[in-house]
Length: 138
Image 1 (cartoon, rainbow, N blue to C red):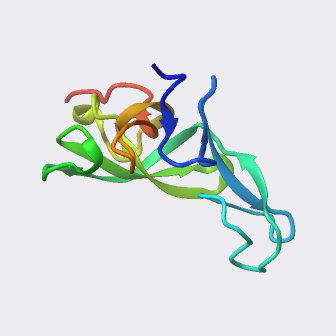
Image 2: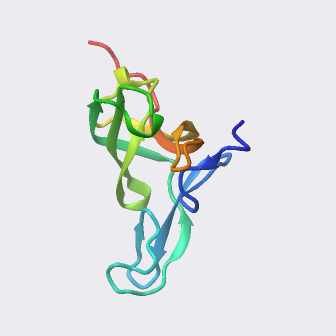
């Protein structure tokens, strides 16, 4: 099924393996962006498409218990993940199977899998981050 399911948005990810987010890099400003902009928002110069890190740290998150949009599981979580290797903080869905393990500051890994529906109301591939290790219970 994964080979026939389209990404939620073209040009944002590589299915892998390994799965990767695709961002932009401005060689003039030496900055990376996600998602890839048409031009560098700082200098208006050309950007190059580059793969981004598949590892990060959970900066903050929210567990959403209202009706989920786009056929996402309920409840679902969104959070900011710092991709230290790229100097970026991005917003992302978080693993719906690991909500109880989420903790600020924990290491996260990128996953790409069928999750929810796209604009065409068909299943789509989405990127999300999942905890690299279970949160230790006190």
